[in-house]
Structure formats: C-alpha cells, structure tokens
Length: 372
View 1 (spheres, one colour):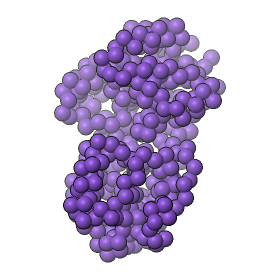
View 2: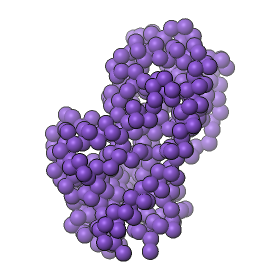
View 3: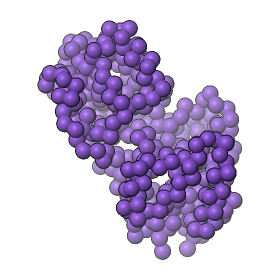
View 4: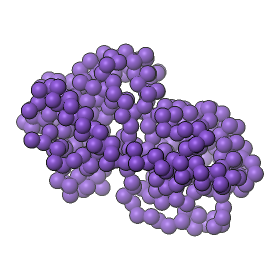
C-alpha cells in the first residue's frame, strides 16, 4: 500500500525556492511508495499545474487571496476528511499553521511542518505560533539548516526532539536556454560577469551587492552585474546603482525561468543575504560549474566550505564581498577549482536523492503512528 501524502504550499510552482521545491518533491517521490497530492492555499502557477496534471498528481487550489479568506479552508477540511491522508507535509508559515491545526482536527496520523526561510526575529506572534502551536501539533518540524534548527529551539521554543534537519535540493529550471546572456545584453564576448538570482527583497541585502560591485578592483572594474528576479526593492536598487555610477554595468533582468542558462554564461555567482535557509541558488551554481561567493549565513555554512567549494564573507561587509569577487574574477584557475569541488558534491542534493530521504521519513513516521 502506498502512503497518501498531501503537500501544502501557498503558491505551487512559483519562482521562490520553497515553491519550486514542493512541486519538485511531489513529482519525484517514488510512485510505487507514495501517492502524492498537492494543495495550493493561494494559487498554482500554470506551468506547475500542467506538470502535476501530466504526472497524474491531484492538485487542490483553495484560491485564497487574503488572510481573511478563512472560509476557503473548508474545502481543505472536506478533502482531508474524505481522502484520509497518511501524511500532511506543509511548507512555510501559513501552510504549516493550517496544515497542523486542520490536519490534527481531521485525524491525519503524521503531520510535518517545514520552515524554509525567515529571520526568526521581529515577529513575536509568528515565533509564538511556530513554537507553541505548530511545534506542538506537528509530528516533526523540518529545518533546512543547523543554523535554523538552533534558532527554532532558542528563539521560538520548538521542542528540540521534534526537529529534523534536511536540505532542499537542486531542481533544474524547465525553461530552455535562451543563449548567451552577453549577446542578449549587447556585451563583449569576454566581458566579466557576476550573476545573482534572487527575489528583490530586503533580506537579500542587494544594496550591499551593488556597493561591493562599485568597489571591484583589477578585472572587476570592467565587470557587469546581472540580477535575475523582481520584487519590492527594485526601484530603490536602480536608484542606488545610478547614485554609485554603475547603472550601465548593472542589468536587472526581471523574473527568469532560465537561471541555469544565465549561470552558465557568468564568471561568478554571488549572494549578499542577511539571512537564508537553504537557497536553491547554491545548488544551481554547483550544477552549472559556477564558482560562488556568498555571505556566511544560514544553510550556506552547511553547504559551502570556505576556500574549497566557495568563498564565504561576513554579511553587511561590501569590501569583503568585493575582495572575494575580485579574487575569483582575477584568478580563473582558482575559480575553476572551486567550481569543480562544489560540483562534485551535487549528487547529495539532487531532487531524486532528497525525495528518497523524505520518502524514508514518511514511512518511518507512519510506521510509528501505526499506519498500515
């Protein structure tokens, strides 16, 4: 008998790391052991909905567009009662809260809450609900890094014995390669390129990236910065680039589904985040042989060995970030060694290998709960 697993996320298939991971997980769990379902509490992206349908995976869309649309959860209650799932695997705060409370009320034997990325500070209500509601109702709480596990225990009060650390995974982008990004932007074929793929949000600290770019030395003085992604900080970042006098060397690409293709064109990948969970961007750099410079925050310190599989710098230090970027742009031999060492570790983080680990967890917890 296969286990029936309901995956919950706000926007299935959106470009965020957690959303892509959930869709990838549902598509890659072993079909002879798991019968996956997916619930989008807000919406499902069309390409993801099509992929789920073609794979024969049922998709439930609640269509919530506001926190006030609690009445739409009645559809979830009805499906949980009718389908009698063995496991609910919820992702991100909203789905964790509703998945754990409704799942318990409907008698689901195993409930897994999964936190991907937040600062664990500044929102006392969320921290309380994580620790005292979700953390108590869920069978297990997944953290994506050791740093997140510590914060969940110390800052939120999640019971330590409830937490399991499991990574996210590399999920190839489905969009075909659009060609050489240099040609797309009208740049010289040998123009040095630094690449970023991120939502333009405050925690990504891209203002630090722009300041570091203005400080690049050596061959970095001619480097261009390409930023794939959009978000609320874009206008401020564009103004900052103009103020720093680097606007002609900074290219805002908007949302892109060909990130793998872009990374194959750049010389160095970069992250300047104040905090992270386990970003998919690090795996995308591994998969495309792109050397990475990143801040030493969250799950990045679990994955990146400084000086061997990447270069790590302190957060909010544009000079340190600029120096690390300059060293890889100037020393191509070092860049190739770092990229090769990182790429050699990718097998541990493919979506197939990570989905197998989660499948083992579902079966273990279901057996403990008495699921036949």
